[in-house]
Image 1: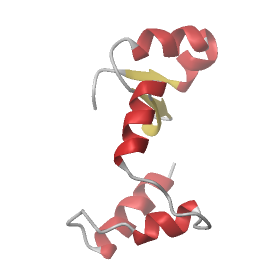
Image 2: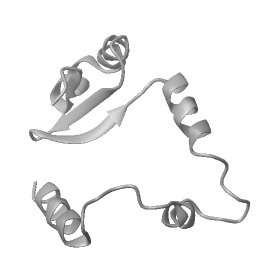
Image 3: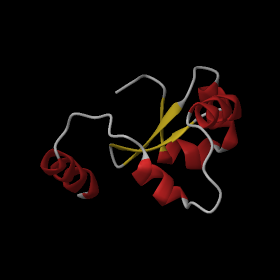
Image 4: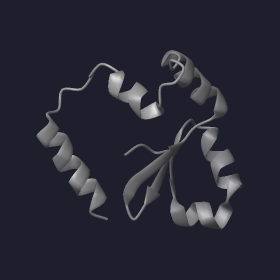
Length: 90
């Protein structure tokens, strides 16, 4: 796990100040019950990623766009399902 993490408890306690401090070091991984739950990134990082992903054709839902993207991973469906089951078991 990277060093730029923030627990949900710390986020509740410090609020936006915790996010602002963390973003000085890059994207922040939010940890809930000892598992990665979300990532917070700066608007500039988000816009850069969104621009790299290309435009979504009009009339296409986000899910349709995602499903239309080429596969880039090497994991089998079985392996992905196993990992998702482990992640959801919290």
